[in-house]
Length: 203
Image (cartoon, rainbow, N blue to C red; front, top):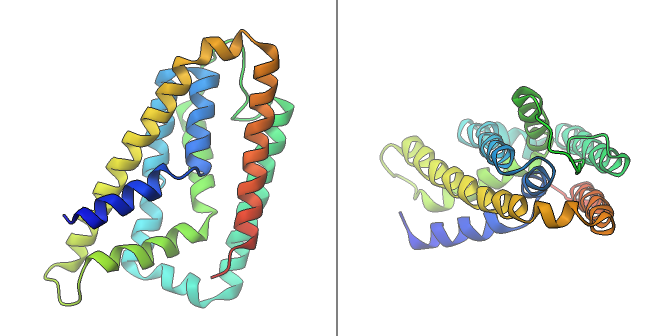
């Protein structure tokens, strides 16, 4: 395992994205346990993109402008929906003063949609993993799976820290209505910006 891979992975994982925002919002809205589930589901949301890269499906997305754009704009629409739901305080990322349970299946579905509707993740893995698996490497697929496992583990650990930190300051946020309103608007704005960024991305 090269130090270059670990450093690159850490930089990618700690960069704010939809999964990180979802986990932080879950920690604020529903507490530490729920944030750990969110981090876990975000981590497993990587699997389809990892498999797409390993099996070559990412190359199809890269080659087909139509397929790429369809998935991309579905992703943009879903991110904007998440922003709208947050502002209305009715969606998955609503921050409530009273901690409520949420079906794990519903949370998993939300996270999977966030991840699946972002074709750049598949193309990222398609371009990222082969850099650390030299041509001619024996059992190249096994090696890519091993690196992907490390990437997923680091994702879970970083996201779990994000969520637990958010849960730790939950009481301070909930006791201040102005801060609570600001947080809702911030989450909504973050999803709008992520949607705009995705809309502007090219293959």
